[in-house]
Amino acid sequence: MKLATPVKPPTSNSTRPGGPVTLPSRRSLNVCVFGAGPGTGNHGVSALSLSLLSGIARRVESPVITAFDNGEGIRPASASVAGGDLAYQLCGAIPTRRIYRRDSLWRIRASGWLGGLASDAIKVIRRADAVLDVTGGDSFTDLYGARRFRLVTLEKMIALEQHRPLILLPQTIGPFRSARARRIAQRILCSAAAVWARDRQSFTTLRDLLGRSFDPSRHQCGVDLAFGLEAHEPVRPLPTQVASWLSEDAGETLIGFNVSGLLFNHSASATRRYGLRADYPQAVIRFLQRILRETDANILLVPHVFAESGHKEHDPDACAAVTMAIEGLHDHRVAILPDGYDPCETKWIISRTDWFCGARLHATIAALSSGVPATAIAYSPKTQGVFETCGQGAYVADLRNRATDEIVDRLWNAWSDRERAAASLREHLPSVQRHVESQMDEIVARCADGVGHRIALPVPRP
Image 1: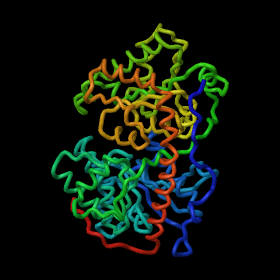
Image 2: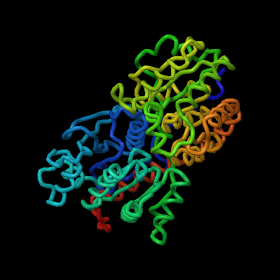
Image 3: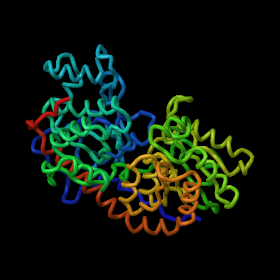
Image 4: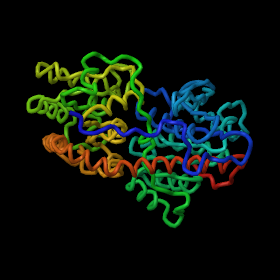
């Protein structure tokens, strides 16, 4: 029996309260997007991209949108959002040190210094009314290493150096461990036309970083864009067993479970890198074994990041390893969702589960935003803040401060408490979804303010 009715975000062509955004010119809105390139294989990043495209399409007629990705040159693209097909374009901006490559971020920046010489990317940026940057939702930090920090800040530098309004969309801000990273982050945050932190913890970091430069009219607390992701019933047929579990009249309880390749496939390096106390693979295996032994629930393993097989990020490899570890223990009650379903379809699938657990944050956001009680297995500060956004802070199991057995017990208690979690979620979710809509209203309005105008903000030094 299903515990919660999925709550879907608006999918029609409705406009924001008070009517559509009015642009101060006859041409449509023209924006660039960094940090949310579609087609990365990471459903979380793609969810941010699709949510943003949908939000703009429901507010602006015929927007001109360029999303920067790891491809080459400028290419046409489209997305099925807001009840139709939205045409936009992709532009290569590759994070590589090979500056001789035309689409290298470093070369794009150097071309900007030289007046945009032979750079399609610089031409696109200069024509934009605003540059939107979401940094993958959680990468504006030096937690993932100095090189990655340089690359994510490079994207922001390019926009500021071309004097375009830089809008940092809802994302985790920090932590910044080095003094140099803090200085660079402070300059970017001061220079941006608007900044949204995606949770209270990040908002506190934002205020602390800016100090007297904090401006409540530009620096705000928001919610993750993926709370507004549309859910689409899959076009491609589901495996027979999975389809029966997801059907409206399914009488069996279904658990959705995301296994992170990042934490499972190379657990020793992940433990060192993130300072984990618990053994993630063992916690996952022991918990699922307990579910199979002590309940009648079925388990659907849901990958959320896809790379080449053998890559440390590849979730399907981790899911396959889990099934091997519990082989022989009620095999008919465990299935892996195959590849081939996009983020909107995956959200629909997740919305049909009775309880969801995962280490990929955006997989759990797909559940929460659908009204499905969820528990997150955390390895960084980002998770707690996002769960607290919708009153679910008690349902986070942090690998950094709990032993393996404690993680298993915490997951079991969360599973046992799912009815109360679902009730709490029903209470909090409407305000979160209203926040998603009002936030997107203001983002688009901020972009519209830049139509036909240039800005002269102080540009942070590299």
